[in-house]
Image (cartoon, rainbow, N blue to C red; front, side, top):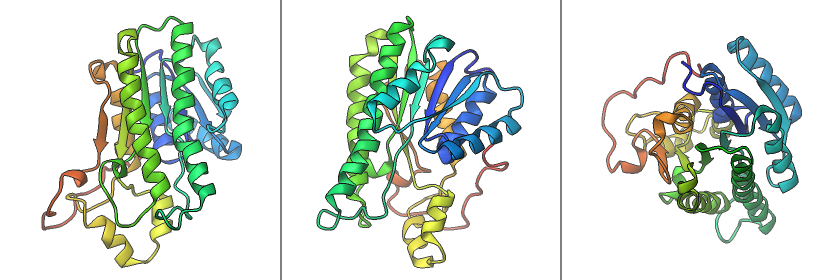
Length: 275
């Protein structure tokens, strides 16, 4: 406990999934946390859930933010000026649109929307975090950007705009890590595998073949859990990762390193999931 004691943290896409799990871990580790999302009602539900799980949490607040709009992101970051500025930002907000397809069938408006949220949102978050770090004299700070394993491997079930956007996040994160290293600002990209979230499960539904086509690639025999990604974010946010910079931090159960999956039963997901 106390791995983020006194640190001021922002999490975008905080209303659910990896974002909410990260907020819970951050709060448990002593951080002051600003939860950011585009949906006000979803943010309020997330905040109430966080408070019920971590009743002794330090400072908590919410900020409705459209990360594709720089003015929104600037206001989000400057919201922490009264706390002493940002120490950690997790640029996690993103979309994968249902109409995202291949080079032939992806509509231009879906391409533009995906890049605006997934790429410009990370750029704006990183830009204004750096301005805050400098403004408040931070000597060390951490930026974590959500990419994806699809930026590292190809898939025959295309989502081209999403894949391209996550590749851009990796490249941008690496360059920012080099540019700001001497200032003490670390930048790392989280590369999650497909996760056992309501969004994915609703999309897969009862289609066993559709589910198997994806699940078969995991050596563990199962999808990942949001909490397993949040634990990686906590490490990257903490001083324990002080010499980790510019990485594609892959948390995929070995999926991107697997040629033939093992036989036998699947591993069990972590107990007390999300906590």
